[in-house]
Length: 76
Image 1 (cartoon, rainbow, N blue to C red):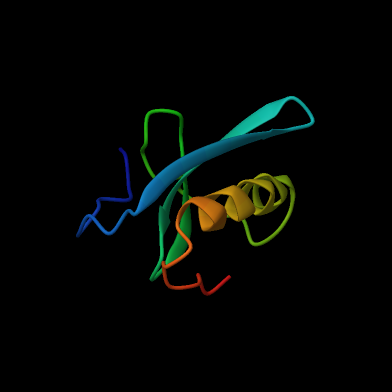
Image 2: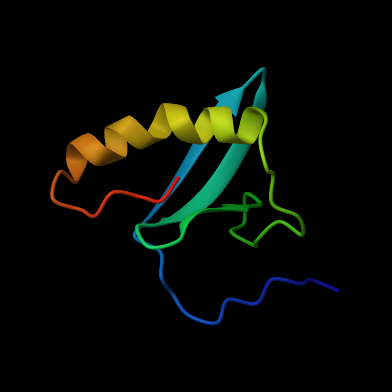
């Protein structure tokens, strides 16, 4: 059984990054921050609180901000 049904589509962008050979994926919302997903876009059953997934996200985020300078700053 797959959990994590999306109630609304609040995604502003999707991203991915690799840390130590493992690839991480996320949907990003200016309002809610990243939602870590599988490669197919299904939300992960548990969301990481810290660690390499966040390291990948924080490496991606400055490029997103540079491409979207007028967007509201994310809460993370």
